Image 1 (cartoon, rainbow, N blue to C red):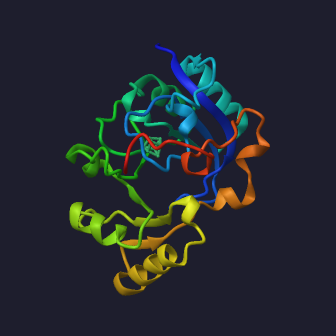
Image 2: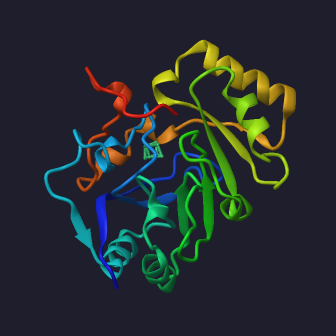
Length: 230
Ligand code: SF4
């Protein structure tokens, strides 16, 4: 079993999507080649925000920690977790009867058996067909009022039957133009579109676990260069 580079892991609850509110153990892996300008997980990839040492943990060790937490589900996230081979980690988690959820941009083939896949597309790395076909729910990060129509033209969002969550990008979560565009789109189109939010951030629940790291969000860091446009 190959060790995985772990940025943080913690017991919290799922604050987004269909499984919102469920007790969840999060495993956030290092590494992301996508480089969104508003990334809220910059500690996993941005040279100025990486920790001094990258912790590497074995899949069975991670799975045992998750099992000990008593969570209902395990969420593997990043970074972009699909750049890693997740076969052993998913196997170890499922072996302990833990449903395995993956959050990915969908640009890389998924290695490992997942119980739920959330695909959040990024303009810097477009989803591939095999990931689109496996998607259980979409999550669109809305930075600008015209983002939803643009994504709806670009991807077959209404063809799979999967819900399409519309989340304001966190630094725009009080931006009336962004919120208004989501309001109007959902009222005009209905299913599969759903208004969404990162509810866990309001509760600050992730921070209660000492294994979690402070949020490193590019758009929230003073003097931050933005290495890529999303
Ligand atoms: Fe990578 Fe973008 Fe996700 Fe940040 S927000 S981890 S840059 S895909």
